[in-house]
Image (cartoon, rainbow over all chains, first blue to last red; front, side):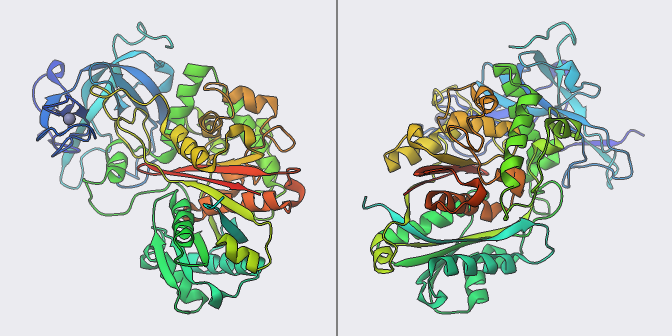
Length: 158
Length: 396
Ligand SMILES: [Zn+2]
């Protein structure tokens, strides 16, 4: 029986549907259109705006790499990681979303290393799982990953 | 100038890994500052403690903790916390009390006993805390953020890892001359290049360690300083404690995303740049008036950003400035003559106070082998987690 899947944080991304349907979920101000991620609850943070309750909005699937790095050492708790398993570096990508005019962090999809990335490269948000494996509750934690679009063909520094 | 307060005394407990508690370090630094000032503890009318989150409850109420350790004497007490900017908040609180006439003489103390390795957030399940979330969801350590800036500089400005290493080499050379520094050995570019990659492109020797340490200042009104016989003391002329402006377009710890710039155009000046600008405006001086600067070199690459943010060079020219030797001891505008975080390691609430201690000794002309000849004005700059600006201008 496959492991139960629960999001690492509820409400930050879509949980069902196909990979093509996958989106990060932010919130948007009904008055000034400012977007917030992680999804801000309540009121707009634009100091010049008196907008009302923020509403959920899916973020752009595609963005361009603002910067990137990797983690060569195991991060401390509360990062979910099995200390029994040798540490595998993960890649961290900061991605600029043109429509939202913001930068969103995320881990890169499995197998994508810093050598596969370049500032300005186009990437897309895809569903992924945290690499810690099933937790004490037997469930895997789902998350979002950034993955180069047509890896190897859209690189180049900006 | 009527807004000046005098620095009567400066003291430190040397940085290191000493295996003792932060209260002991802070008490040693406080006694050092009081002795330097020639002030009796019982004559101090206010004590301000910069808090630490790593010392349990006594760390949260640092002002009272240090007052108790020095011996209760009934002074006004304040405890402040603002992450890496805690020390500047403490200095600013003391300054405000002095300028408001609430106290003539104020003792400022910050101390930490730091754990080994990455700074980690407080325990428990706290999904409403951005600092908890960035570790939980992304495993984004502090060096990961420093590395994102470093890679961005490489892509935008053509900086190289060799440029970053020059900062470490420079700061290690200065720190070797500082008895309060934790690391007192020269470092070569080859040693930096041979150290392990922590977060590409940054290596272990590009990233500051975490340390035990303490720093303290005795501040007073200019009138009190004159009555006390200090006719020409070092003066604190400005303290900048500004927040960013919306939308903040650069990722900072512990952000998972920047603000959106859909509705409002971001300021052309970065948050770090605005911290220094507020300090310059309040002090009525500019970067051209500086003899030295102490900036928060959490990483080597970040020191290059600070050069640009405090106006020592144009954006993108930080690497050229360090290559020119201008920011080394003996250069046109030495930066981190103390050795910086590269030589100290971070003792969070003490660090911004330690920066002012270095300005004080340099401006007095008592910095020994590190002395910058004829130093007249200096700036400190740093940035606390979640948007606490921190910069101090001192003059003589
Ligand atoms: Zn709004």
